[in-house]
Length: 331
Image 1 (cartoon, rainbow, N blue to C red):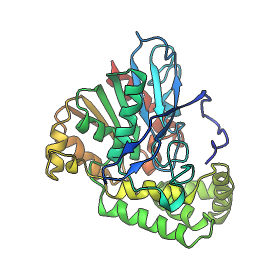
Image 2 (image 1 turned 180 degrees about the vertical axis):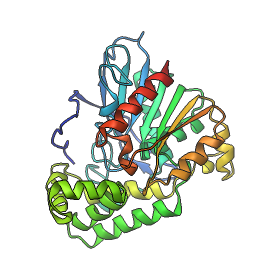
Image 3 (image 1 turned 45 degrees about the horizontal axis):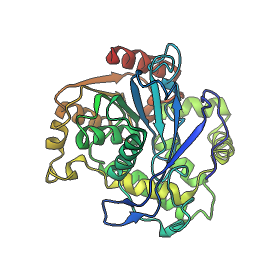
Image 4 (image 1 turned 120 degrees about the vertical axis):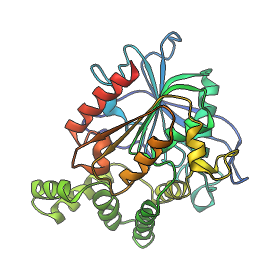
C-alpha cells in the first residue's frame, strides 16, 4: 500500500519508519524484518516535552487521529510531541501487501497484543520509557486498553474512544460480513463499503442525512467508492487486521487466565473512555463495561447520532466535544 491521497483535515508530517529485525508473534510465528511506520507532530529532538502515543483504527493510517492534533485541540504540537504509529497490517507498517519475504497470504497471523508489542519496540528504539498518554479510537482504543494492561507503568494516562476490552460477537459478525464481501469481490470494494462504511460506521439517522445530501443511497455509495479508491487499501491487509480484531481480549494477556475484568483492574493509569449514544460496530455496552472495571476510569457519553464515527472528523460537533474533554482530562 502506498500512502493514501491527502484528505481535507489531514495534517501532513514527514513519514518515518524503523526497521526492528525479527519480531516474535504471540502465535509462535514471526515477522522476518519488522517495519514500523510512524509520524511525529512536534519536535522529537526536544526531550523535555511530554510524548503522546497515538494509535490508529482498522483499515486506517497515522492520519486517524488528526482531528485531535493542532492548536486549540487536545494535543498541541507546540507543547507536546505526538507520535502516531501505523498498526501492523495497515499497509504502511509490516503487512501482507508490503512484506518482501512473507507477502500476501504467507504473512503470519498477528494479534492486537502483537500490534502493541511492535509499538513498544518502536518506543524502545526511540529511547522513550514513558509517555504522557496513549490515545486511540476504535481498534486504536482497543490497543490503548491493551497498552494499559500489558505496560501499566509506561503511561500516565489513557484515552480510549469507542473501545472494547473483548471483541463482542456482534463486532465479529460485522467483520465476518466484511471479509465475506471482500472474498467474493475480485477487487471490488462495493459490497464491503455497504457493510463497513454504512452499517458498521453509521446510525440509520446519520446515513439518512448522508444519503439525502448525496441525492440517494446509491449516489452516496458511488461517491464513497470513488473516495475509497484514493485510500489505496489492500483487501488482504484489512482481512488480516480484522482477524486480529476478532480474537482480541485483554483477559488472554499472560497472567490473567482469560479473566477480562481482572485484566482491566490491572490498568493503573487514569483512563478516559468515550462512547456515542449508539454504535453498530463496537457496541456502546462494551465500552461502558470496560470503564466500569478500570479502577480510575471516567466515562464520557456523547449524545451524537454519528455512531462509530463519533470519534473522527466526520462529526465536527462531536470532535469539538472530544477535544475539549480530552484537553480537560490531560490537565
